[in-house]
Length: 503
Ligand SMILES: Nc1ncnc2c1ncn2[C@@H]1O[C@H](COP(=O)(O)OP(=O)(O)OP(=O)(O)O)[C@@H](O)[C@H]1O
Ligand SMILES: [Mg+2]
Image (cartoon, rainbow, N blue to C red; front, side, top):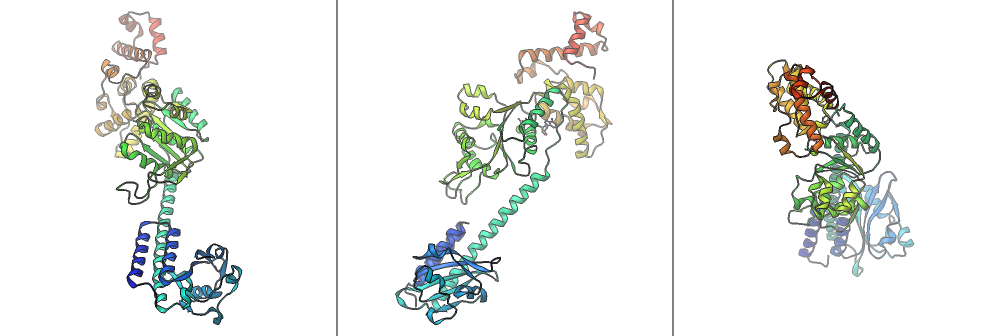
């Protein structure tokens, strides 16, 4: 007979079931299970021993009671003592008086100076496999444990098994996920990097220099210049290759969600937080985190980011545990961060932290040598992707591509080529297939995107205008210079300086 009422026992069991469903903290659940078992069967001490197959022994996973902590230091051989016998035979055992049972192994009780009288021990089975035992010692009040106690302890053993199974499945999924991620980051190489201009080669050299270090990299440049591609190359050329590269577009996440996205949350942190969730920083652990459009972060998140950069620590939203993370940060923005700092929209201290190794990626119009190779590369790519066989780009069309202003940079060029491959009916992409304004340096485009220094804007204008005049005169420099009302030698110098060519 147990002294607690059946409804109380049921209540305890219900509480444990609920706990199992709400957490993967096996350690906590198993401790709580044994604590409940103790109360329900009125025992002085209780423990869970798990089988260590390699050592052919059992070790204490949970040990409650006065001597619990001391007992934990011991292991029991398979088949030895009551616990060893139950583990080996996979059957419950009720021993009213240990002195009268040969199977009892007195060693541990003696060493911790504990008087054992009665023991009830049941196997802990996962599916059909015995993985350990649950044991309760000394019924309070001097009686022996009953058969009813035995079936209650068996119920607790089932609950423990469910908890262990849950945790194992969760670990498997987590492990699988990590492996999958590793595989993905191994197999997914960054896209080819096309660039022949000395300007871009210089930047690629900077990537080679900084990649193997852990230095924070700040990528600056207009939209579509290739900041993300640069970030990928920094990661893949670093020792962190094979570890995750986690990309976060700070502009795409609503302000109220960004903190949990970055740092995760604990269960119950807010209404929808039904489970614990890892943030991007944890996911990037050991690898690289790429914070795109970092200029969009609010002031309060900027402070939290600063802390991660300074001491690599953070807390999940709603959590109290401070977590440490090993990450390399790459940030990107098309904003002028100096200006943002001066207008108090970006923290100066964070800016200095980020600005350790800035790489400015020049707009496409300032590296026009890259236009032809990029156009050819995109042509081949879209031929493949769209199953087309466009052979090339006419000189006239290429000329236009080279002179265009490219406010959307490489991304715009990529889109223009994709569209022209779709539309192209002949074997070559002609001027008409491009659908871009032939007047590459219209005042309109400068108005839309006032990013050029005056000198560059003027040079752009000169380049476009002189090219047009040269075209009009069949590239005859004498006639063109007359029309422009400048010396022929001056025109020739401008052609060189402005990098003007027929194709
Ligand atoms: N040098 C390059 N070689 C090949 N492809 C490139 C190059 N630069 C950019 N691209 C391609 O152009 C597109 C735009 O580049 P990316 O997304 O890296 O630019 P971004 O600077 O991050 O733009 P945004 O600021 O708009 O996010 C991508 O598809 C990228 O692969
Ligand atoms: Mg980008």
